Length: 523
Image 1 (cartoon, helix red, strand yellow):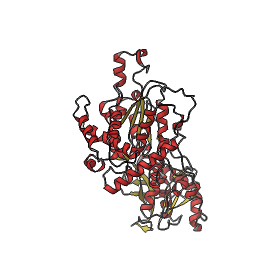
Image 2 (cartoon, rainbow, N blue to C red):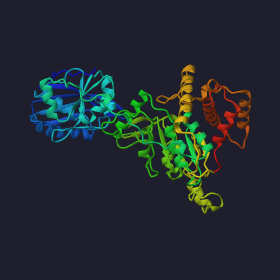
Image 3 (cartoon, helix red, strand yellow):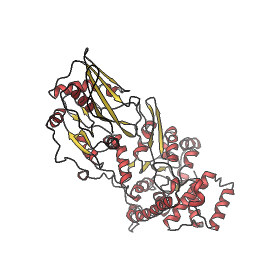
């Protein structure tokens, strides 16, 4: 627990307040120590403070006066500890003001076990900040039980059990409560008050007419967490099929929901007053999205689209229209489930265990057969964005043709809910297998077949004798060109096919199905 007790310097009075800030994907507890000394008026902030934190001096000065208190015309030193950790954002405004007022004898010290965060307006208002949930997690880890926060962040803080939000709208209101020892009863925000955040309604798989091959690929992708690429002419239904994938995934468990919600809070993407994100998120960035926005970046590293799609779906429509350097930046998160962002301000690692679903046309015009008017040079330039290493990381590659059934034809297709039941059952089998066999997987990813490791293949991929012979024949076939990594990826999809059928052993049918998707359509 960080100290909050008052103390005295050699020449003046000091105070210590626990504040909160964000560093990369995490919240951090910051000890804000303030000393008011005799000397010429000066306000110094030390401890690797960013420009936004240093500018707190002017916001704090105006807010204190707006709250009816006197700003001390003395030498003021504010130290932010740990001093070697860069501090960024405006969340330390409120603890700096409270420490200064306590050090100058104009306000009581916060009780032990209390912390504070919030941005101050020049009129003394306390404004919400991004990253409230990860900061609340850091506060709980530091032993904080009561968290003074902006009213706009109170519901978000209340999502975390074990910590009580104390919402305020103005600095003067907070100071009056502290002077009266007001206990904030009854609580003004509880976790149950906020409705869970649900993603936009995904199209139901029942709206897709025909396309049995693509439907099977989507089910495999959902069950095993595999990446999938749908290729075919315009109007074949690629985008509709890709949009159905989120509706096939089971809801997030409580720990996953808290992790996903914290990432969206850090990025400022969480709606005001919203609850936990309980369903896998869907992100669909435009093809003109730059690398920094896709994988994360900025002067101070922030999560990008791949991290906002963590434990959900990243939909890249018209994949070949993305710039090559943008797509190549996906290779690390596709393989490891995380992304490393290096900037002058530091190196941060963000979770990015998303599931990629992409669509692409075979050429710029997309017309099938002899109707294509593209030259060989145009087709080559169009396909240049999709490198071999990138395609090698996509387990399921499906050719989508025009459905033989008109879109408005009568008939009933299987719904997303029915497929989701099989997907949930298959994922339950996978989680049990990971636990029973103590299988390794990267940190921060779920127990799904996409993360099965090659070193454990003898345990998680029991093959029947015919299935083993088929796999060996595929590996030896020079025309197929199956690499060692390709064998493992094929086995992962075959493992998922067997799980959907409720089998422990992988059969010939499972290997054949995985092989047809693995080699993909001819470009």
